[in-house]
Length: 319
Image (tube, rainbow, N blue to C red; front, side, top):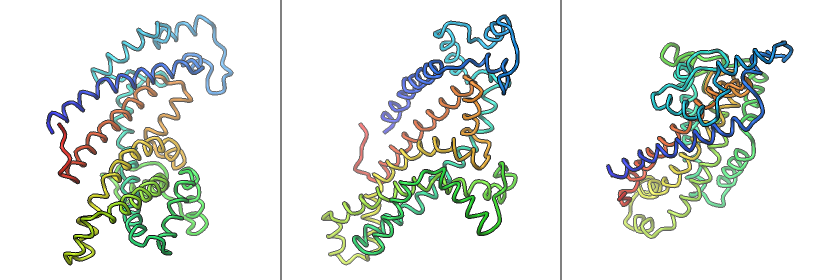
């Protein structure tokens, strides 16, 4: 196991380097110039000379050859220096330290809510196959997959306003400073973010449970007189959770991507909203830093999931 973990950790390096190369290249293929955006202003009406443009490009470093810009950026990241913002001039690392925990809290809560609903829903749907309960569960999961999360977020806001006349407090309060306000601010965005993920995980749980329930060892456990609750929880569900864990790891990446829209709708100052602002401002440094942090987070989750596999099924061995 230790050797396997070491190998997976070593794979971080080429994977992250590939991500940095792709992000760095794609950003510069797209039209737009940070220096031009800064000089032209938000409305694009400011006047400036070619000399001013070239001076600002030299200050930002965008006048240098692409390979030199990439090398300087990667070398800085190896020293945990993500550079400075091309828009406001502050260190990118400081912004990420402030905003990454917010997005991480939203993502983890959304994944937790999704699993809390999806796993029982999938289990009940499998146990009550082709009954009214199964049909209702399948309709819920089908609706969850079909409806985009930003539409769910809008429906939540409309429902809260029309039925209760109340909206969650806008912005963000730190969990340790004001837990109750934090919960109000994060719960509904997490609910909207995790709705489609709940549907996907619920369908995976149902399929896995249906397959496991037909295995010989389940029939043997029932023939031995074990209580149905023990058969389902100890024998069926634990083995059915392997594909569910895989789906949850995949959904974690989708949830991180989904925060881009959800944070903007609920005015949460996390990495998703930060990324949108950086794209509009052509802030290359910020975009690059955000994408690298997301890539490292997803890689870390994948390693953790591999360890969870071995706990769920002791027969799994990594050699």
